[in-house]
Image 1 (cartoon, rainbow, N blue to C red):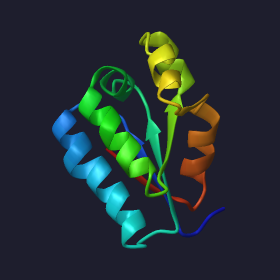
Image 2: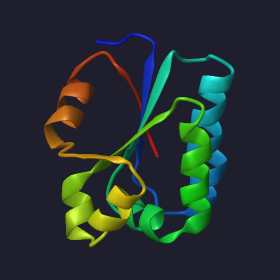
Image 3: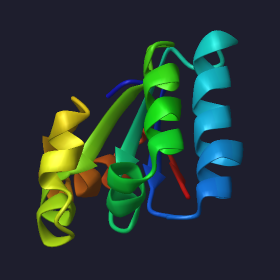
Length: 113
């Protein structure tokens, strides 16, 4: 268990929410050292947003460069037809069902957007 690690479960496919909450907070969390590490979990409709929106893809690259880790749900990507696009971005693709369950049951920090 990582006590100073933040997980952001990103399920909202609104580009404004992506830029002005998820990316803004994750990036500043690393730059300002609010957290030792941050993982953004791409889940559900967000998979389509990431696969199709070039500005969001550029934001992910910029925020990744600060040390934020992005990981996408492989089942969601498969179901939404975004698997190849997410993979081409170099993002981690894993089955998030059990890891998310474990995370929720643990004392790790989780924001859901």
